Image (cartoon, rainbow, N blue to C red; front, side, top):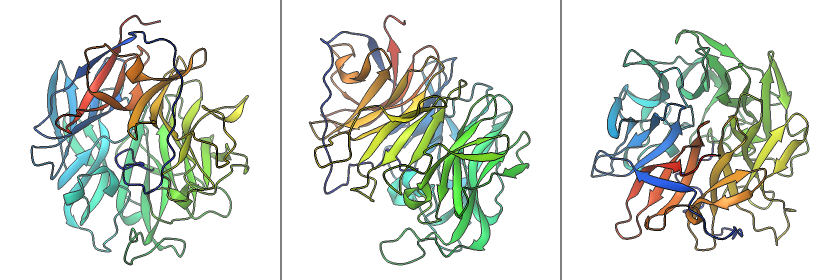
Length: 400
């Protein structure tokens, strides 16, 4: 649940990587999306080209979940608090919108909860945060398991929503309150909501673990996520195990053999059951160094960029989305010290999208967050002149 909002941008030590690409070829045309005046980011794109994410007003002090339709930005709204977001590549092919929002209620235990890294820093904490789902344009809160907070990360055509929710249990493996800590106190468990917003089903954890989260779900009801300690509620030791839930059973897709005991997080699963995400690095418990992975039942977990976790291993990548054609998108820390969006394909390997965009687009494609079955990519670019962060759609020039 490490968020791309801060990954490696505030790190004191990061690993830079430079990946060779073929001679520059214009494969994509980038289109900037309008904002509400401030920063914006596109995190999800469905097969109809509907884009979801967030947009901020000019002061960048808060943000609201946003949908982009026919070139226009539309506010999705909040549950009464200052911030909301569609933070994961939910795709929402059935016309619903699934996301997270602060409510107007104060956070009684002063936890930061999982929402905090995804919201505008000035207003990111202090309020209860709930997952939400829209029905006929109205936002409905998703329930907890007895605690204050919940989270919605992905949905499918069955009306199921993958997420996580707090119980009332004070989990001793939580990081707890204190200076420099996240303040997580209550246990949280992976859940599937739906088909009605009030229905919630708890998913099992890996034996010996106490908390976890479901981060994505496909149209056949296969869910993926994490299992581990309660810790921070934003990943780290909660992501000791990368998990696939099938027929009510938790499967450790790392087979207990992953090199790090932190940050092992699936981010997306396609309808063929192929999973992508990022693995922690044993050298770095902060999560500033991660490695994009792909998993299939036949091959198990494999890194997109081979490496050996030694001091000379310069891969620093995160995979965020996959479509049903097996195209994977994400971002990596490039040699210029900036995040660069990438696309990975089995026949081409990993390519920097900045090498494939139209020559007159002078902004840097920083994030590639989701890809639909038409090959359209949702993400974010950085304007080096104004320092503005802009939601973008990256369209294939010649889809193959």
